Length: 348
Ligand SMILES: Cc1c2[nH]c(c1CCC(=O)O)Cc1[nH]c(c(CCC(=O)O)c1C)Cc1[nH]c(c(CCC(=O)O)c1C)Cc1[nH]c(c(C)c1CCC(=O)O)C2
Picture (tube, rainbow, N blue to C red):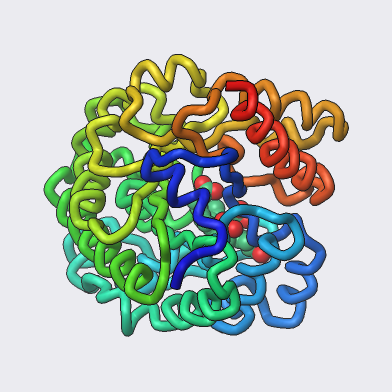
């Protein structure tokens, strides 16, 4: 179906756009009272994510209520370990927890490569329902975690300040680590292809824990596998967001992807210089900027847009929106992008 608003896809491919498209990482979630209401009607996050009609409903909320230029399917990156045989729990106010983890070949031998269709049929179903309900209004973003970030959760069993267990495995058991990374990569390719077949118009790979690896390990244990995913996904544009990987920007420019996400520590002009003009850049307002007054949010958003200019850009925050941000401030961010980026193009 022809999309009515395909700004995001055109910007990703480097085509001319009338204004900069805008969406927010983690837009489907706790910032909206409407989300919390749906969430409270079920036992918790996992039940919500596994009930396709409700997952579709909360995916649509930011499109209807905030006016973003894309929907992102409501799910989590941790559905992949679960589909491989390592279930997770989501502990209220604390985050994800894996009752079992991977620390030996015996643990790894119990896992399988996810096929992405049968194992994750609830996500696929949610995508189909969402696409129908969107009726072409905006594109739908599919996503997955990057292999390194998924590996880190599977080995560690939860979030961590240092991820020292998962980093230790790279030194102590590199062959085992590579086997696990390879299984995650194959599962992720299957999963992203299933999302695309169900209707995802673009996919994003989240490498949230990129920033804890040294550059040589990032190349060997992270980018190598991201690169395999980028090469395998030929159907739709791909965005790679590697939080904290400022040291890898030149290497990332070589990936077979359309868009590179920037976090808020990454300088915009410097990133453009390192990455070149063959990629679209996505980001990168400090998520904490939305704690400012409406006038401050507007000013900060304009400064960001001035720096990106009218080149290849998708506006976003530098990481996910914080749960206690006032949705009104999110609207100021979105509306400023829409209005000011149109004005910038009228000037040239
Ligand atoms: C690292 C990571 C996770 N999940 C995700 C990442 C990568 C992005 C990033 O770096 O933030 C990605 C994710 N998680 C969720 C989405 C939904 C789509 C969206 O709006 O972006 C996406 C894209 C829903 C969610 N995932 C989670 C929630 C909150 C659960 C709830 O409603 O109680 C939501 C809406 C839970 C989650 N899931 C995860 C953590 C650490 C937590 C707990 C902390 C937190 O709440 O942010 C793992």
